[in-house]
Length: 336
Image (tube, rainbow, N blue to C red; front, side):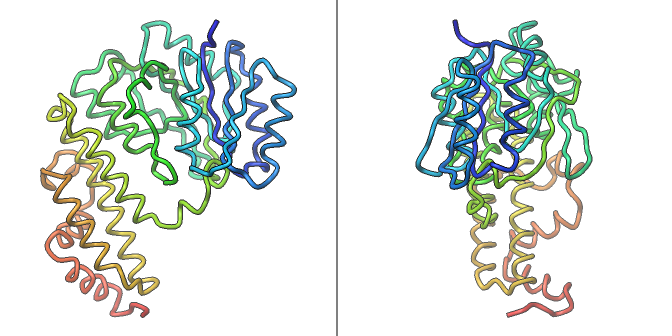
């Protein structure tokens, strides 16, 4: 008999936090679980900790020992293929969860045969509790609900997902990158039938990303933003109902575009980055390809500051002029 929930934990050099995380997971009040630990080519004692956990809980714990580092996304993909549970949940190896998390999520899922069930989570670094899926967004999804979910974002770790959803190969994570779940969530919200929620804080996010992916992947945020924008566009463009959610998807793309432009400006002013104009040109070209609307998008107007819009518009026209403007705003100081 298959498990109710497969709990997937990607692990990379997590020895500092892993035992505490695993203690939370193996002691779930939902007993009908399988725990899939993916060693993402760790170089510390993480694998030894995983093996000890498996020794103590052989009926619950499976280990996938990957010799090739592929980041949190690649590790999750390996586990998805191995998972046998009715639903799949994801936990990062430095985070904590309530003992009742999967019992409550699974019970809610069975009430209405939900494709996805979300819960609240707590972000330690910001001392902030968040629930992304409100009661108004629950149930069978129409285009209005889908757009609000896309714009609202969220985290994969506060949710469970019906395993059969992963028959769609677009519901996979990009490997060796950060922002690996940006396109995953946009595509998910665009395609699932229904969603439920548990209005409790069940997940505790500690924001120590070294332990769930190789830190080398975080060194070039620019590339990761570019790849995330491209992936969102390529995954969603051919959806039959794309037009109905296009405004929300383009808002997400504009958010990433703004982030990328501002990272380039920061590098230019702070480090004299010589390739900033080339990077800004590449971003502007991508923006023209993937964002068909303009900055009058209702979500952009409501959520994006006027200065950020003006910066993006200037980059659209001339990245070189944007760099001149940025240098002037900084008092003419940019280190070369």
